[in-house]
Length: 366
Image (cartoon, rainbow, N blue to C red; front, side):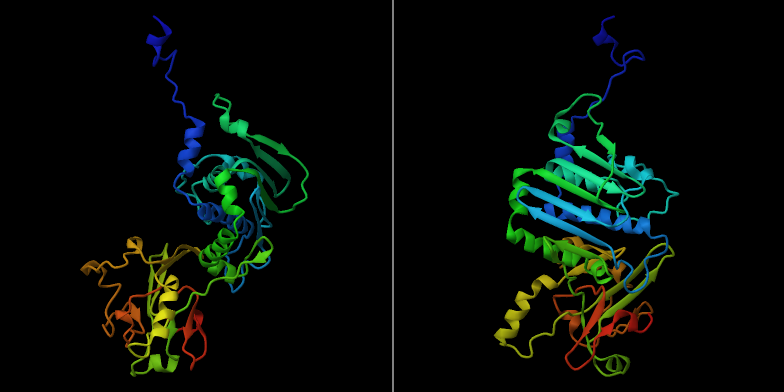
């Protein structure tokens, strides 16, 4: 029997091969550069979560932790002080994917094990990962590794070594893909990345975490809604107030705020006010926050049902103004439900100029 005819037998099993270059291109095809960089920042936050044994509660649980990004046409660097990669997780960190364990308590943001590798493959042809937790190590990925299609070609260059960082990680990409280098060297992209991180990391930044891009600190974007003074909300008088919903399944706690972030024009024909509202359109939409991270920010697409009529199945979650519901507190008596902009509030309620700022923690229990 020839070798060809013996394929698939016990002696000559048919081997399934994966083309590395095809795999890398497929893995990175559907991710934008901004999202790839957020994947790297998520890894920083995962380091904080692993390092902190207690729950990240309180006003500033991330204070003292930082990530610094260096953007240039010929280089990208992200460095943090978030604890580093511990010895027990090194192989998992550089593996592609990870086996789901239903008994594991997933406290980290990423659970699939592809974020760092996908970002590296998306951005660079050559890169270096250095990390220190209990000891320092370095892993290199170069263009020859990407071209190696042999059975041993998936092995990475790993070396324990002394580093100039402690309890942190540094990823350096010196040979960027040409299209990525053009973006990273662009001032408009740098400004866009500032805004992107400011929105998606708004709560994390507000809780003390620091992100610097080329030496400039990223300031958290405000997450706010308009509301009348608390006394007016508690009274029977008509008042502008957000919907507030609270659900707790025992495993997942959901809080939702729906309202207006800007007052409507005082009168028809107020062109200045209408222009201001059009310019503020980017602040409208749904913001969905999971474990302090905005996974959707100011969305006004079909993804969050924007422009789609509610069905009867959603009637217990969303009711018109003044509709009774045991699940919804402080129903809005103003005209906010007819407004086309209904953003979720994540951090604070912005009061009108006649009232004080009221933080979400000060609102009535619901």
